[in-house]
Length: 51
Image (cartoon, rainbow, N blue to C red; front, top):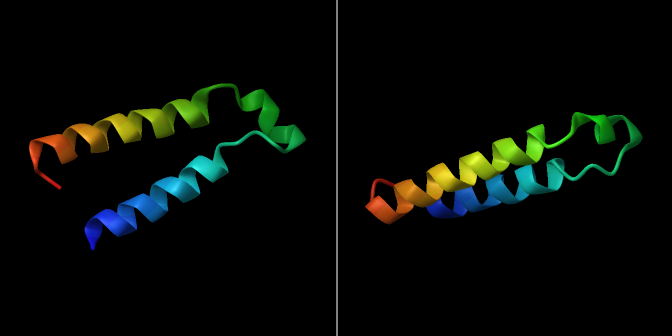
């Protein structure tokens, strides 16, 4: 159950960091870098069995 919720949240975050609007093009790599860091943390926690 927790894996499904985390997967849905990550998909929504990945859709949110796509720079398709003119005002978000100046944000640079910050949004996608934050999501990438979150993915790495979740992957490590999943591999160690803590999630």
